[in-house]
Every structure is written in C-alpha cells, then in structure tokens.
Amino acid sequence: MIKHFINLEWKSFFRSAAFQTNIILKIFMALGALYFIGIFTLAGVGAYFGLEKAGFEPLETLNSFMIYYVVVDLMIKYFLQKMPVVNIKPLLLLPFKKAKIVDFAMGKTMLSFFNIIHAFFFIPFSIVLVVQGYDPLHVITWHLGMLGMIYLNNFINVFLNDALALVVGLGTVIAAFGALQYYEIFDITAYTGIFFQGLFEYLWLFIIPLLLAFLLYRFAHNYFLKRLYLDAGLATKAQAASTENLDWLDRFGKTAVFLKNDIKLIKRNKRSRTTIIMSVVFLFYGLLFFSGGIESYDNPFMKIFAGIFVSGGFMFSFGQFVPSWDSSYYPLMMTQNIKYQEYLKSKWMLVVIATAISTVLGAFYLYFGWEAYAAILVGGIFNMGVNGHVVLLGGAYIKTPIDLTSNKKAFGDSSSFNVKTLLITMPKLLLPIALYALGHFTLGPVFGYALVALAGLAGFAFRDYMFRKIEEVYKAEKYKTIAAYKQKN
Image (tube, rainbow, N blue to C red; front, side, top):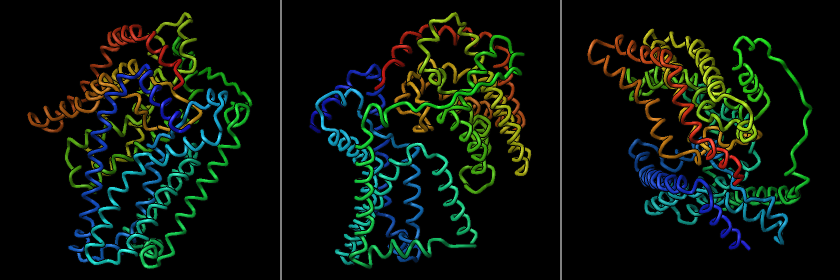
C-alpha cells in the first residue's frame, strides 16, 4: 500500500503543470541541501575542538545551550517545513485503509529534510566524543535522547499547523530569556542544561524524550484517523458573515472596488493577516544593521539593503503573491468586465500605502543617526516607485494558489520559484545598492542616497507606462494562470 502511495506521489510530480519549475527548483534545493549538510557536518566535527580550545568542557557547554537549539528547530519547522499532504479526498473514495493513509502522511513528516539534517551534526559530534574518550554507551543514550527531542518537535509542529500566535509567543519568550542571559540578569540554561546533560549521565533518561515522541505520534495518528472523513475535518467550517462598506475608499474611483476587496481579504483570513504581522517583524530587521551588533553588517551598503526590507515588509509578504491572493475566484473574475489596469493599480496602491506607513513608523531609527533613517527613507521611496511595479510584474509568473485559511508557508512557497521570478527579484535588492555605490564612490554618501530616491521618483513618473507593460504580461499569462489555479495538487 505504501508503495502505491509513493507511486501516486511520483506521478503527481511529473504530471503537474509546474513540472519544469519543479525540476529547476529541485536542482537549487539539492545544492542548498548539500551546502547545509556540509555546514552541519563541519559544525558537528568542529564544535568539540572549538569549545575545548576556548577553555570550556565541550559536551556540558553544548548541553547548556541546547534549549535554544531545540526551540529554534521548532520555529524553523513551523515556518519553513511544508506539511506533507496526500490528496486525501479522492483516496477516501477508494478501497484504501484510512490508517495507511495517515501512516503515509505522518511518515513523510518523519523523513523530512528538516529532521534528517540534524543527523549531520549529532552523528559527527558523537563520533568525536567517543574518539576523545567519552563512554560509548553514554554517548549513544545522549544521541538517542536528542533524536527523541528532534522528533518530538516534528510532531508538535503537526499540531501547531495554524497556531501562529502561540509560535510567535514562544519565540518571544525564548528571545527574552536569551536577552536576560546576555545581559547576565537570569540564566535559563542553568536549569535546562541539567536535563540535557542528564541524557548523557543517566543511561535511562533518554527514554523520556523517545517515549514522549512516540506518544505524540500515536496521539496525532489517532487524531487524524478519527477526522479522516469528508464530512468531518475536511469539511469547510461555516462562519457568521459580516459586512462593512469602507465608503472612505470611494474617493479612488473604480480602483476602490478592488481596494475594499483586498482590505476585507486581509482582515478576514489567516494567511493574509499574517502579512500584517510580517510587516511589523520587518520593521525591526534593521536593528541587526544599524545597532552595530554585527560587524559585517556595519557598512553603508548593507544599510541600504536593510532600508529596503524595513520599509518593504508588506510589499515582500503581500505584493509578491499578487494575483495568487485571488486564486480561489480568479477564473470567475476573469469572466467579468474588469480592466486589468484598474485591478493592478489597486494592488499597487495598497502596497504603496503600506510601504509609506512602514517608512514613517521606521522613524525611530533616527536614534542611530540620520544616515540610518536616510537609508530607510530612500529605501521606502525606491520601494514605492520601482519595487512596487517589480513585484506586480513578478506576480504574473507566480502561479501558485494560496489557501487563505492556513498560515503555512507564510514566508513564501517553494513552488512559486522559477527562473523568471528569480531574475525579476534580483533588481529589487541589487539595483538600489548599485545606485548608492555609484553615488558613494563619486560625490559621497548623500549623493548615493539621492540617486536611490531619484530612481524611486522616476518610477512614479513612468507609472502609467509601467502599468501598460505589466498589463500586457498579465494578459499573455492569463490562461496559464487560470489553469494553474484550477490545479489542487
């Protein structure tokens, strides 16, 4: 039975409309996987000797900070690990045992790269421990305990599918503990390190994380098995409808219809509401660059890079998925008497308004000097004038439907990747840095900021021309987009 499921997955991959995109994606993913495998392997081998050279006891020191490793692993899995799903509805109509369907779905989570990658750290590190004279049996029990923690995270992630608030809250708490430890106010590792060190010192303690992982697996298995019916967990939940007029938008003419629709979409759906959270998170991204905490980031070129992200959080999290936000009714919308240019203008206007708000809110960076906020200000102007058009152009080639009821893949969808979107994305980041560099090395940093701002103003001046060109691209890709949105797998 499992072999048959694998065969179905294989056929689904090759018969997908995005087959060529997936091939290119797999190549890049393979290269990325090899890179991270190499990094984790080097870290596993070098961690012992690096800590020893610094004068610390390697295993005890690693165990004291392991709480952060485990929590970061959970958060990365939540935001990046795609929950593997089989096309369940058709399978329920076929003579398959429901338990086998659940086993296959759960098994795919266990074989995820986000679980396997940890082996390239823990196995080399464990080998080094044995070579350096640590008791092999105790090393094995410690290794098994850490394996249990990784898979415990895996099954917790299954239940945290849409619990973004809980994950953000957990991340905030851990970040707060990290700050308290950094400023020597409170050291949480003095308490958590006892457990992780105990996995090595006590031969029986590894049973606890392994047993918890197994129990959570059984609980998840039974949970999904009981709800594996078309009229149960797979059914759409009915909600009370509410209406709002948003009459204040009528001043924008025909564009107001689309603006009202987008604002309602953002307010009413989980995935779109996440873009607001992401915009707030991006506001604080600049602290890595302007506070001087990371030496390699403390240069004017990286500050322009930060300015683009601080002011463009909404643009990157919402704008790049136009028109995928409307994928559920896009085919119907294309049968109506709707002008593409009005539709595109509404998306552009929404992105511009959000970018302007982010730029104003970023004024607190004046605390780090006028140059810090100057980078954000000119970055905002560039985002509104140039990148606002670029994200719309890139959206014509992103044909991935969005599930508005789910927060998964809030940072992006790997299946949205293709060569065209990659080439379109590069100018958003590289062009402002190049313009600033041109001014910086000729007449000074002020001229560099001026060039970036002038490029943004030029984008406003040629707005109508850009809209006509983007409209032509959308019309050329119209039927491919409709066909892609109709695919459910």
